[in-house]
Length: 93
Image (cartoon, rainbow, N blue to C red):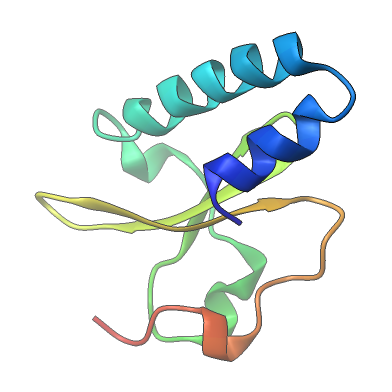
């Protein structure tokens, strides 16, 4: 799910909260640059040969991989949703 869709969903009930939530979510994502290895593996990591990690922000899971230079976000999903399917996940790096 992209951040615009998350913001639109929250804004249906609370436009002010949507902006605040997205600002905090973007800040959390930016923090991954400093310490991407501190978060645990995502449940979906066992489906692919990739070190897929997750960081939690409220009810959302930020799924990502990283190497020495880059952090790649593969999805932001509500925790109540089903895990990502194999075809939605990154392949081996």
